[in-house]
Length: 394
Image (cartoon, rainbow, N blue to C red):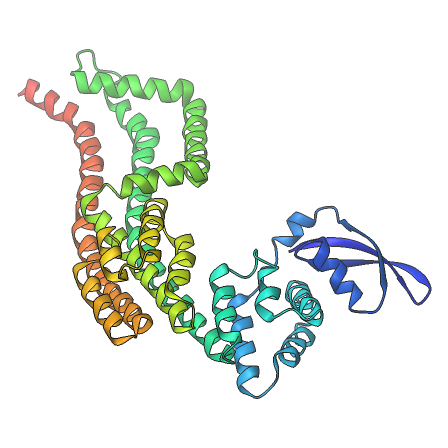
């Protein structure tokens, strides 16, 4: 959403209104609904910052719209009711006004959604478009809501499995910095008056001197490095490189593979169940796949268009598992390929849960041992000079 200043002619007077809309055309259409003549549309200053503060509640919109349609309202009436209900939510009102403006021109609901790609994903547009001819729009919206819920559950499970290692590593780094910049300098004061010192004590005294003379510079360097690491990791190229490296970890790559397949087959099942042809459903699903998988699916689509069976082609391009291939074959024979894709996704969900649990049981203790060993090494180094001095005295 962005903010626009619209100059218009209403009742013989020129007015300037502030409008929230997806783009200038949507702002113009929104003002035209009031019967005024739009003279000019310009982006307001600071529109990008204000536009990011309010996000369109897609899940709530779909839930309320399907409820109103089930209650017997026609689509236009349901959208008008939601627009009037939005109240002070300018983002919701602007999006619904743009949808209604497109539909008043005689365009279908799917076209109105496709006109705002930053709000409505292509998968939702395809789902709505496939249901418009059959009159099953409420069912299609509910099916998409269920799809988003399942994908979000999978995403939370995968994210949750990565949160704990991140917290442990952050805590270990914090403890390490505390010991390096606070504990060691104070502990080394014990050895300052001694004439003969072992190598470990000399190293501690040297580090204490560095911290005392350049402590602020070192602290600023550590903070700057942490900030740089944070911003670098957030960049698209670095995140893509990190993801590629994760795919090379043996056990973790299996978890990632199951996640991709579960999402892929759930998307294909949703589209086929809504009436989308198989090839079109697979083509739309390309957008949710990682680049390597998308490239393999593109090759598979060429063979599918030549008339080959989906089960054989997807297995040939490593887009199935042994179980998924057999279930696809059964779906082709029974004519229920969409339902079978949903079964495949459900099966992979269970396998994904087991893989995540196994990964957590193995990786978390290893990570704890690594952090403990790192902190323990510093503690041993702290007391090593005392042990050596005691041994030399004895």
